[in-house]
Length: 418
Image 1 (cartoon, helix red, strand yellow):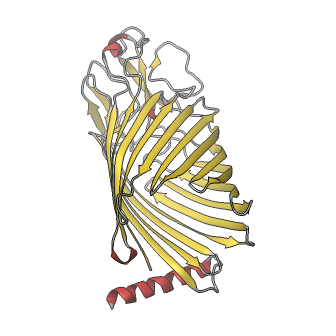
Image 2 (cartoon, one colour):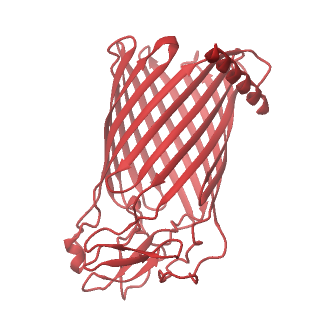
Image 3 (cartoon, helix red, strand yellow):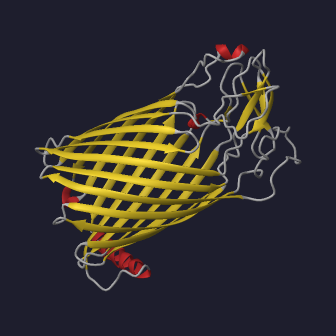
């Protein structure tokens, strides 16, 4: 009786919420509720714990509405961008209050990183006719030092007896960056702890506009293919306010100073994505490829492969393999050399460098009674880069300038219908 009452109240609450975005006036056919908890843990570095709750409400008229709530916490040491040294290094904390130290020969890690994020999104689908749908949604998220507001819309049209689908999509986000201690001045020297830290006076803002076109085609009774192109334009503050770059001696390789990084304020990205799903009897194999290029000089290739083995009517296993290869940004430099002219832009953030990353894992799902679904996912992620560059200077030749990052990902999911 309690469960039935709860389901009824949830259905009523969702119908009322749907009215707020203009989707009402039809009886509900189905409500699907999904939830998941994920743990991401790097060895001796970042840990992320995330919870997700999503609700999808479908009406008999073909209209639908969806809502999603995400909450995550992040903590643990994070690379600050500086290079290793042959002596103990001391760094000022991002707040400007206090300091932390890094042992000889180790990658400097900022142990102060801690944040939480709350995100809420919702939207709906409105059929314009038998073959055309219009969808739209809103997004808002908030962190300690970062907030984001966004909207998206898509127009989808079916052709060839619904065997072909074309979709035109667009989205816009406006982000505000308010780092602890304020935004550092680009290329400014990291100051000693104290109240008089040199900082820019205002918060940073960033605007992101995405335009995309997607084509989905039924190739046969067992095969579906998808191809899409997305153009993204980012304008505004894109520098990481917590990252620095070592300014090293030209002969010894040890740091003489630390400068704050500076990235371009404009970025244009092009993404081409293709995917094929193929049914092998009762099993499903899925393959996808993603190519990204931008005017920062980054190019990346992503190959993703899954195989869903339905070994019974209620249980499945899904092995997963992902390969990622990225070329470095034009302004990526592991360190700067004293006496050289400063570049226009620079960042030592390893996420902008040459890298190869692998993800391998397994997901197990099962159908419980009353249409409830339970799943478990366990994966291992490994990221590697050029750890010993041939042009390294002095003591830097002996140190790992791009340590391998390994992480465990564990997720539990649960979904049910009302």
